[in-house]
Structure formats: structure tokens, C-alpha cells
Amino acid sequence: MKKRYRNGETWDFEHEIGVMGNRDVILGVDGGTTSTICICMPTFPFSYPFPDPLPVLARAVAGCSNHNSVGETAARETLEQVMADALLKSGSNRSAVRAVVPHGWLSIDFSIYLITFCQIFLFFDFCREIFPTHVKLYVQNDAVAALASGTMGKLHGCVLIAGTGTIAFGFTEDGRQARAAGAGPVLGDRGSGYGIAAQALTAIIRAYDGRGPVTILSSNILQILGLSSPDELIGWTYADPSWARIAALVPVVVSCAEAGDRVAQEILQDSVEELALSVKAVVQRLGLCGEDGKGSFPLVMVGGVLEANKKWDIGKEVVNHISKSYPGVLPIRPKVIIFCFKLSLIENLKLLKHLGMEIGCGIVDVTAIWKCTNLFHFGIFFFFLNDQVEPAVGAALLGWNFLLKESHKEAYKT
Image (tube, rainbow, N blue to C red):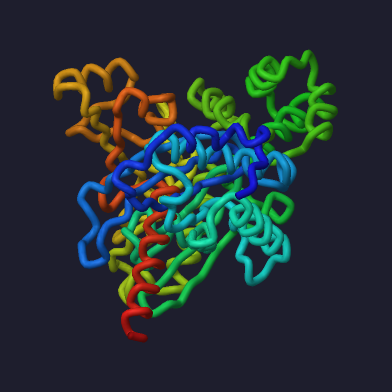
């Protein structure tokens, strides 16, 4: 087995750690232009229903793994490190892995765009270098895994992804599918993190040369970037116009909107309308709402743009817009409950409070978990609700479903 990253240091733990009970596991990987998340989920008998709640043995977080943003070498290193971290935290090694399923690498429909074939080849080539030959590799469009993350693998409904980029994707029970947006920033990825930040940068330039209204976006963004004049913003933008670098300015836009800046508020309002429009286009084309337009359908909402802030909750506003046309929309956002087996119930509640997490019937937003590091070293496990899990878990669930189908095929042959 080849060792590439850091001269093999990434996998040194395999010589020291024992696999607990030879337990088989599945790795779900959510990788993109902002961060990469890998979860390690145990397999369970195919005759059993999904456990409630879903057990996640480990969760690891690393940086960007999009090779278009950081290059092939850096993308491979990030993926290898995050998967090694997840296995280390779970007490497993590569021999225990049954399947690896990525999410976040196929953001463009691979039946249309050549660039995704490069991503597929890169992922397969990379995984075959570091994993044993028995490990199954399953690649699906990101929207499939994202929808599965909210419907426990049932591909019916609509998913809205709004992070650095954005796409709305819908599926019907008879296999029909439709998409809206997701063509990238050049072709107008409005409503995405990149789209919001790009509008803010444009607003600064327009205000500076007299074509637009004055906005506090100018002073706030220039201060964050360490620039003294909007003139310098031009050089900063084109020096490295990577999507994630631009999209990272979204929190500044939100804070300006919350401070009452009209320009920033209009940018976010435009984002809400564009995201809602993408979902409504998919729902209408597939008839997810029924003949009378009032039928219920799940809407899985994934991505940093849709997270709630102090005053601005873009995700909530998107749902409000959609529900005016389709009152049967059932929004689903990622949730998670956590438990530390080394602590009592009272101590667990104190831990949540110390970490600044919102406590409500033992449930907290998964985004709050992202603020934590090395929690597994303290014996902390995450359990995802059976109808609301994050994309990396959705990817792992897809892997379990693929293994189940293959098992049924093998049984049929015999």
C-alpha cells in the first residue's frame, strides 16, 4: 500500500491502534472549496432498519479539497488527511473500510460538463492509491447525497445547496429529475456565497466612482482585507479570483445588513429571491407539489449561506418565499445531538453550554459542532437524527444503500 502524504506519517497510527472488534465502517466525505468533512459510520446488518439516532463514530474537518481552487496535490493531501483523522478518531484503519462515498466533488452534473470527469478520475485514482482493493468507491452527483442526507436515502423531493456556489435539484419517486442554477459564477450563480460577495465588491466600486449609493460595505470590507482604498480592491480581487476567497466575505455582508445598511440588505434580499426562484423552478417542472400546488414535499437545505444569523436568516426567508407559492414545502435543515459517555447528563448539558451551543431537547445545530475540535479525544460521540443529517452522513448512507443493493444482487445470483 502506497504512502504519499508527509512521507506516510498520516497513516503511522495504523501500526499502533487496534481495530475495535474488526468493525466494518463507511466513510462519507463532504469536500468543497471552503472545507472538507469526513465522517466514519459503522455498518450494520442489511436486515436491520436504520438505527435511530444514527451513530457516527468520528467526524474530522480539514481545509479546501476542490482541485480547481487549490490544485491537485493540495486536494489529494487534504482528502487523505481528513480521512485518516476520521479513522484514527474512530479507532479503525483502512482495512475496516467497506466503502468511500464523496459529496462536494460533483457539483456540476457529470452528464453535461467535462470538468467533472476530471474530478471523478482524480477521486478514483487517489482512493485506489491509499485504500485496499476490497473498498468500494461510489460517486454520485452532490445533489443526490445532499437530498439523501435529509430523507434517509429516499430520493424524492428537492434539495437546495447554497454555499460557495448554489444549485437546486429535484427528484421524483419514478426517477425523474430536474435542476436549476449551478452553472457557476460566470453564468450567474446568483444567490450563492460567491454571488453575494461579488455583488458587495461591485457595490463598493460603484459607490467609490459615484455610480451607486454610499455603503458601509466599503469601510468594513476594506478593513477586513487590510486595504486603504477601493482602488486597491481591484488589485486584490484579480490577484487571486478564486471562488472561495471571494465567498469568504459573506459574513461581512450579513453583518452590514444587520447594522441597517440598505445596499447590503438589498444584496441579501436578491439572494433570497434567486434561491427561492431556483427551488420553485424545480418544483414546477417535476410537479412535486401535486396537481393542486398544495401537496407536501421535502426541501433539504444545505450550505453556509442558509445558516441563521442574529437578524438575517436567509434560509428562513427562502422558505417563506417558496411557501407563498407552494404551501406544502417541508424544510429540512441539518441537526445533531451529542453525548459524551464519560460525562453524566448534567455534565453533558454543562459542556454544551460551555461550547456555546443552543440546547433544545438535546438537539443543536450541526454548524455549532464545527466550532469544536478534538472532541472525540474526550469520548464524545455524535448521533444524527434519522431525518436530518449533514451531507457527509448522507453520502455514507448512500454507500450503505449501494452495498445493500449489491448484496441483494449477489443473493439473487446464488
